[in-house]
Length: 490
Image 1 (cartoon, rainbow, N blue to C red):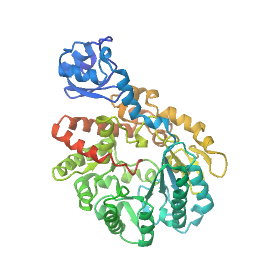
Image 2: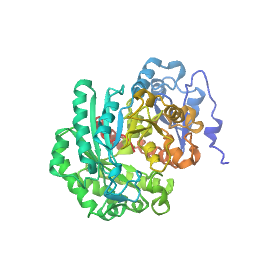
Image 3: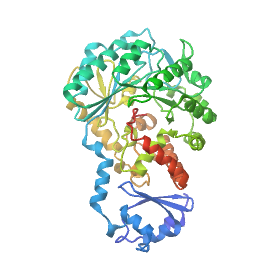
Image 4: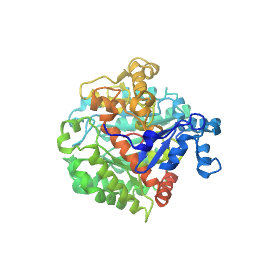
């Protein structure tokens, strides 16, 4: 076993003056964090003096650490609790994200498809209008003051009549419910037409599509028998972007990184910049659906992804010399690191969003803990099914033993490694991902690919935060983050 650095091993500790903290070595410096979400990067000498309670009480560093809750006998506990409550306000709400799978049919055969979509001829996998009505009725039973309905598939536009019905019915229901209603359509856009677009824009529907980079890369990942997937996606993206540029509702695009993407970081970022996108979301592959069967062709190690992420991140910072252009994973983490807000990205919070932050509704009315849990049903595993809109009640689903187990498994205080990690205030565990990769919802973080990726990204961000110029760029990203993040899950 590698011996820990001397400063981390031998630094004395004063339990009277020094408040609770976790630490992580960063070269010859040390990052400290606490449960209030505060952080500070200290030199080796400052870290030893802080731990030993020997910092000069008149120094600016002592004042900052006292303000942020690191000095036990100078702590403003009420202020720190107020900040913690702001960060964790989602704990007092019910499920806000409701993923509705209106069909499993799709006209694409993406290499990494998580949903295990079916052929266009398989009409038995479409949601009926009767089921759709019951789904919307169930959604509005949530105690959350905000509701996001997100259409998933398959390709949702394959079942246009049900999409149209749910949008209209949800708007009518909300006139009485008075919730903050947000509707997202996750689509490849290939079945869109002007009439459908007019309806969706009239009802303030957000669009989210997939764009994996330049045409050759996108078309390789996202196989479309009907023609050029990249051309259709880019064409509709530009049209929707023009029509929503000044609106709160808009279009966003997502990238799924495959092995073929790894050497193309610059071309991928350039594609998004050329489109006029506000940023790019560099998402790693998930071991779900079709990706599991072809992992040896399209997959990679955590280290390979992080090499790609760092190169892409450095290039994005170069782009920011000319314009504000963010990376979404970084912006989510930076919001947690640099403010008292939490963007409520459901896969990066503790407890995670499954069941208490989101619910997923299959085409047949089956209710699942989350969309990833619903995906397991396509693999013959119903471990995450928590009911049906055709029977039982909302309370039966949100109080289901599966939801309780997931909440326990995703509470970082219950994870041995997570509870000691300096990144605990900013991170989250996805038990469904752990189940997919390791066969248990509790997970084993030292061997978790997802854990290594998240730690690597946070290492990169804290390194960059030491540069004042980069910190100013990050703060510009956070000003844009005041807009609602229209896509709140991976």
